[in-house]
Image: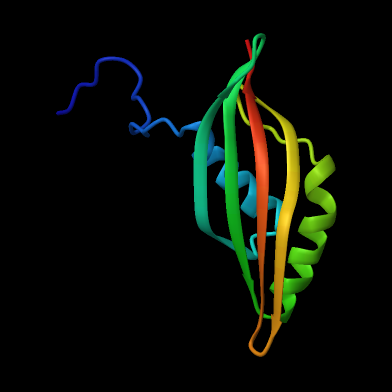
Length: 117
């Protein structure tokens, strides 16, 4: 006979940091058609705000992914991100590289995340 003491807790999951959540949000905005191939992060602060600046490079492989990449480029600057504890204050596409044979595209973007207080 097995006796349990109270409700069972869900399995422990490591807390995801804002950079991981940002990568997930960018891939979701790309319709799941992108791969993060580079991500750099630097602390950022002003007199009134603290946060981090992120440089992210995404790869879109194949014709359908390239279409998703074009839509991503259009949507990114005005997208409302939902990252707990963070506000995306700025999101900009900084470079785009298209190749037709084989079809792929690389998109570089820079995002400024501010810590919500």
